[in-house]
Image 1 (cartoon, rainbow, N blue to C red):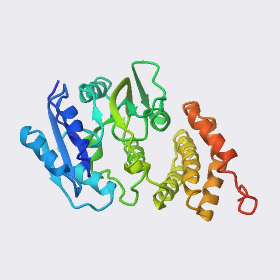
Image 2 (image 1 turned 180 degrees about the vertical axis):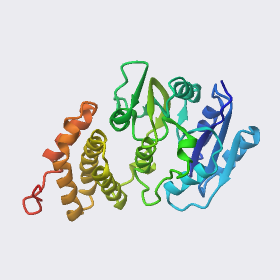
Image 3 (image 1 turned 180 degrees about the horizontal axis):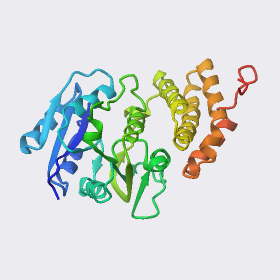
Image 4 (image 1 turned 135 degrees about the vertical axis):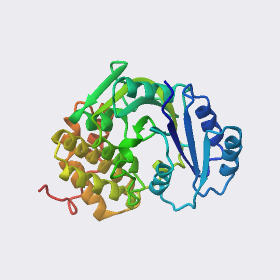
Length: 319
C-alpha cells in the first residue's frame, strides 16, 4: 500500500516557535513512504537551524534554502520544482497534522480513483464551525459539482488536500502565478480542478490550522486584495461551465464585501465604490447557492446593509 512516494511540501519563514511541532506531526505519520521537503525562505530567526536538526535525524527530510523574495507564490513554485512524489500534500509550517492525515487522504484518493482528496480541518482559536461537515463519511464529486464544493464546503486552501503530481507537472505544468500573493491557493485549486475528473471528500478532521494574527492571510487590505478580486471576475467571465461560473461570482461578491470592510479603514474611495458595486450585482450568486454556508450569506447581507452601502455621491448604478 506504500509503494507510492508522497511529497509533503512545507514552506517555512521565521517560524522557529512552531516548526518543531509541525515536523514532529509529519514524522509521526502512519504512512511512511514520504519525501518531506522543507524550504527555508530566507528566515532571519532560527528556522533553518531547527529544520536542519530534524533533517539530520531523518533522511526523508529534504532541506532547501532560497532567498526571500516576499512572494509566497514563487516559494510554492520552488517546492513544486523539487517535488519527486507521485502525490503531494501541503503543510503550513505553523500548523500540525493528525498521524493518519497522509494515509487517509491517500486511501480515499486511490480507493475512489479520484484526482483530488480533501479532509476537514480544525481551527485553533475559533470555536464555531467555518465549514459544515459532509453528511456521509466519504463523498465523491465530478464535473460541475467540484468547483462549488471546493469553494463553499471543502475550503479554498491547499493544506487539507492531496494532489496528483502528474496532473500538476504534465506537458503544461500548473504553477502559482507570482502576480498573486494573496488568494494564490484558491487560484491554484481552480486551475487544478480544470485537470480533474473526480474529487473525493472525507468527513474527518485531520489537519489543525493555527490562527495567527501575524500570518500572511491576516494582513491588512492592500493591492493584493484588489488583484485577487479582479482575477476572480476575469475567471468568471471566461468560465464556460455555468455552475462553476456562478460559484466563482458568489465568492467574488463575498470577497468584495470583506475587502470593503478592510479598505474602509484606510480610505480607498474609488476602489471601495467598485467593490461595493460588484458585491451588490453578484450577491444573488451567493444567496442562491445551496452549498454556501448561512454564515457567509449573513455576513454578506449585513455588509451590504452597513459598511458596503454606497454613499449617494459615489454610488454606481447597476449596468
